[in-house]
Length: 494
Ligand code: TNX
Image (cartoon, rainbow, N blue to C red):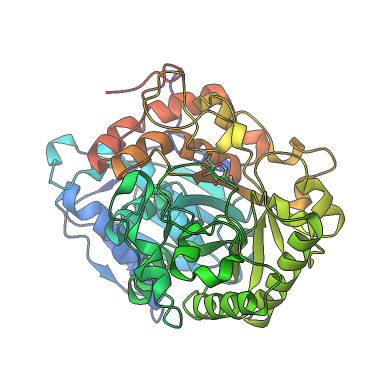
């Protein structure tokens, strides 16, 4: 079977007619709309991808007319049908035109263009011998099925540096993921500086699973991650997990614990034992300090407050706590996101509920909340692929590539349809994940599977086609330094 293309996620509409191709040569220019900083940045981003491997200069300029030999990037707000992130890519032998109604769509389209070129385009060295750098003539019109296509990285169990997070963001961008959920606090570590509560990072940040040194982001470093993600049209959603998963915070401020358990640094991987003292007013002053500072440094509309796995509180105490936190998040101008347990509380219609283990999230839908689907048995990237996988957990089962790919978010939960689902997200919990190499091994190839699940129309998705396209991405990952699991379900190319 020869594939017409190997694009992941598969576009909504593709017509590659076979009528010739456009060659990127020493004379090719990139032209962008005059007066648009974002288009100029996206043009430079494209040039930055193409220049090293092709060795061509590829100047970016704001010329009005796109003559022959140009790749034109155009933002046309009139093109409403393309929505926030859609794009239309038209390739003919003498020019390439990429049009979108919003800059985010242009950026997504650039990733498609990138994937239409040979994998060697990802090389950092000129490999002109691998040319010609041709794009097949045709038309691609594409837009996402779901608005939320997320990846979560747990930087609490093991700390990841700013540089490592940026590398993960680069991998997300290639697959049109648009949300990076950062799990910033847990029993084993607190990872964000809160200036009004300095001990959180200083004391709570000094541990991690296995006893390593931990670490935290200063607010400036966090802002740097947010900016890097924003440049790739990825929204950062920070999570401070509460009222459970708070042992690290309690080691910093023991008075918040009601003396429930003497807070000692924790470097194991059990869950469910810690909780903030929900009936003390001090606790809400603490929550307000944290949420206020986090809201101020987070341009995106969402703050995730966790809410999972609290085994030490009554149903009512838990629900009251979540309702007060929801009010605080609202007061600081953000929308709350919580793990499915928050459905025990009275939720606002603007709140998002993240399903992960069961069907309790379906109840939240009846109250008007929308769901992010992250079923552990399908998309938890920390689950082992097979019994032999050297890292990862298996409490939700083994998750091979096909398991991650072959399901439909709009048919997964009883009573939860397409309109109730804002999208899908693939969490990577890091109890067993010490570094980026290990993170990539678990994320690839399941993350591209989830990316396609979230972006592509159900009618365009097909396991047989996906596994062949996936196979063609391996050479790209080799050049990008992305480690991956060579699943026997995929006929990998060298
Ligand atoms: C469950 S998923 C958790 C996490 C663990 C994960 C390990 C969720 C909301 N809570 O605390 O890291 O399982 O797979």
